[in-house]
Length: 413
Image (cartoon, rainbow, N blue to C red):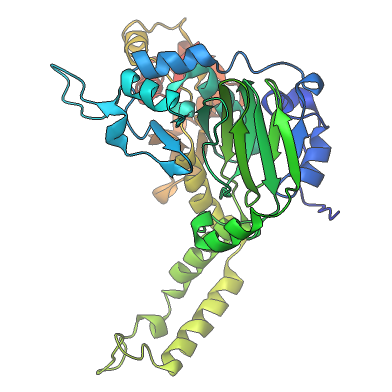
């Protein structure tokens, strides 16, 4: 087993309550041995609590019958093939010009005929999952998404395939027989789907699995990206949550490094010069000597870029990959109207707010809800808010508090 001294290992489970619910081993062991390396099956008896608070069969029925879900928040599949959206959706009826709302009748017909129902984006549509997934993403440092797979008895929703993200599989109801096989393409990136290696996947699926186990309610499987998997529901309806972890990789760092190097190299006169008259990029492409000039300029620029030069771009990508905790717009507007010096506010969870320097000696408060300038007299109050997570309107000043409430950086405490 390879270990890396730079790997960040959670110190205690007390600081990682969401992740600790999914693991039957210490967090340090998960980080060193399993993260992005090996599967880990944790049985319900070895986990601190069940997943009943996160999802259930009643939740499925409510989402399909009463929430007006539209595609792509749901899809259906049978025998490894995704069904056409129009086969399980209908129009919204009078007064609702929506053509693709879930049809509970059509979902029932397909489900009883053996189709699997997939509820996508539960990290946006089901509040217990929203809260848990945001907490888990914060602890992992990587963005997550959550889908539910509802499979009728004795059916397989999808044939052997791999995902381009890590997953935690949480068995919610029923039993499902899982088959796990080693990757045919190690650590696939987001633009390398399993269909790019279809023949190898289909061939590997004929061999014996690395893991073949039956999952019962409360069991959890961690599966690194690239591992082949398929699952079959057993005696009853099976429901499981798949938490997809879209891990940041060194490829993301490389992309930002190259972007920063191109920006730096673009200051060179050599790169700004036009290619020769008569250049035919459609044919042979740029002349070898032009490529070498560019290569030399980029290599020089790459050597000059340091980690600090990448922080802004990577931070922007991280902010865009997740959303802050939900807020209530009407209650927020009322809080603005009723604000007094005694009103208490709290930094909105997962808003990822930081103070950053801007042009002209200015300072900007940057977060997942945007950027806003901060006047010099307000800097100390904002710094205190970011450190403690809360303040009174008197601490911040009424006008600043109103501005923070309107933009959604803070919420009523």
